[in-house]
Amino acid sequence: MVATAEASRWYRQFVLGALLSTPAFVYFVGNLIFHVRLLRLLEPMLVFSGLMVLAAPGIYWGRRYARRDKTFGRLALSMGLLFVALFLLVAFYGTRLGIIQKQEALRLAVRALIVTPLVMTISSYVLRILRGKRE
Image 1 (cartoon, helix red, strand yellow):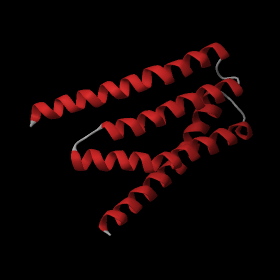
Image 2: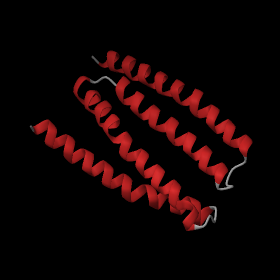
Image 3: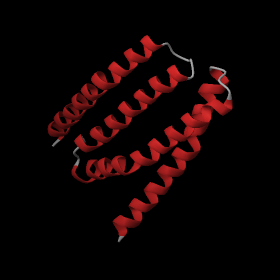
């Protein structure tokens, strides 16, 4: 019961933070920096917020194992998937809103699909090696 209450509290905090900070960030970057009209930013705000809400269980799952077993593979996997999705959405909406060019969006998508999984895999192994040296 305690684990369920902790998970529920953590999930509420994460979702509330995502629902408050994500639209503010999209507004700040899109409207104040790139001067995109607020009405055109409504869809990206909803999609990015929804992605954060959907990613919360995976991040909690990875965090729980990282704290309990000191294994970071699940956390690296869940964060890596979130980063890949975020990069792809930035490429898609950046192109759609006219913020970035299509060639740059393609480069960003390639980086998201190749570099992010590579970095997450390497970081998971580095953390495993460092943990082994401390024990």
